[in-house]
Length: 442
Image (cartoon, rainbow, N blue to C red; front, top):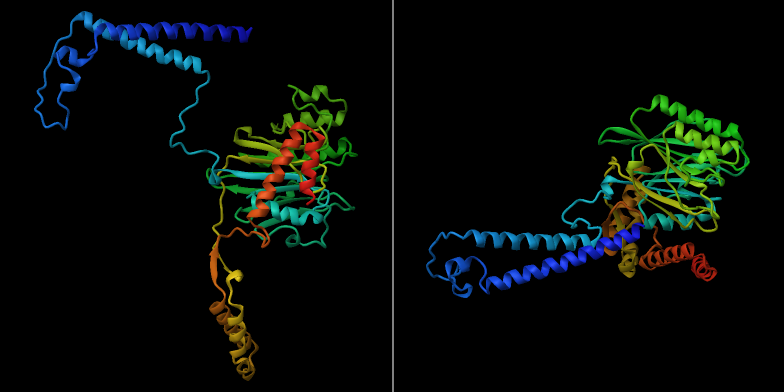
């Protein structure tokens, strides 16, 4: 019915447009070739002196007849109607993109990345490659399979501060990695007897708090496990005033229909229904509507202020993980610590022969004459770096630390791999998945 009405309105608009346009043209033709102000002055437009012609111009006032005024008004009305009919035929019309500042600006947004790792240790190389291409503010990881024997620096670059929570037995584990320019502190007082971790991020303008959490629910857990998460959210509700809450993670609820108006009424088990009611009771909104594992929406993004969500995207996971990952951005102004540029040496253009010659000519034995070890170290370092500065060019780089082996060719391959993943994901074709896996394994 709506389609028929739309086609009918288009047909009527076209008829009105043709009629108005034809009558406007006829009106102009009947007035004559000089149908404008020059008609009242009885002048040809080509003989009227221009502003820069040097000829004298005299301002004259003429009275138009009522008939001429009426005809001019009709012509103006028909021209206006023609423009209106064209706009109606165009359908939806967007604003002309002028000098309007986009809200999706780096200073006014925080980007998040959430994924199930199934052991993050054996994915360290791919993780660092991903972080060299994208600037995430917060990274949430479930099933890290980490313990205290693994340092943060073995997994994440130094530009991230990592907060981890281990499981008492093997497997599991969650973490939040926050960019070093964020002001972050862990909130242990909100953590209960389940795998949940909370961190507080200060937002200066307006002064408020963002509480970011990561949660993992093993599939075998029962209602009691979700009641622990309910306790955590209840404590936050009592103590957190005017905060922005973001809860990420792998919740493992494959039977919830997130597209239903009331998902809890369609749940086949009590734990799923309890979780849906918990979301509603705490005024949270689930923002992911694309499957993240085998047709199921297991990895979720829960927020209490959905109007802050700029965009969200389900993308490929890391290496052999069976979960897709989630990216999204929130519209918030965050406090960023300014980082000084760092000095790096350009080894590709180094004069190695000159450096060896300088090392041979340095009087290293003079250092042995000093007994103070601090002076010995300072003297040796001074002689060494003077030789280095003479033979190896240096330059200052921004604070972003790319891994040494990451270059433009690798960046292009990463983008190509992501394109192949999107094509395979949308089409479901075995051939498309084969192309993606072939490039992924290279």
